[in-house]
Image (tube, rainbow, N blue to C red):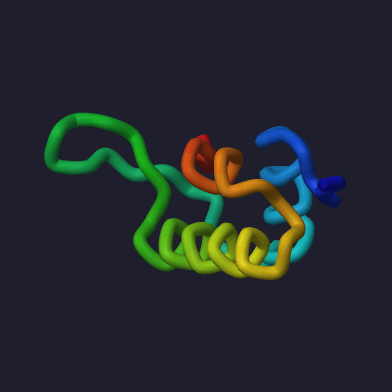
Length: 68
């Protein structure tokens, strides 16, 4: 099967173009790690789920994709 997006770099690029209004600011979580704000993380996860369900990315890519 051929997928439209095949790597995380391309996914991140498209995500930020598609959702340019989201906050790119990273905050420190309770564990001391830098992470994106909640709205950005939730949108990322929902978008990944959408892509996988519509056959635009593989299930394997959906399970390992991170926003960084």
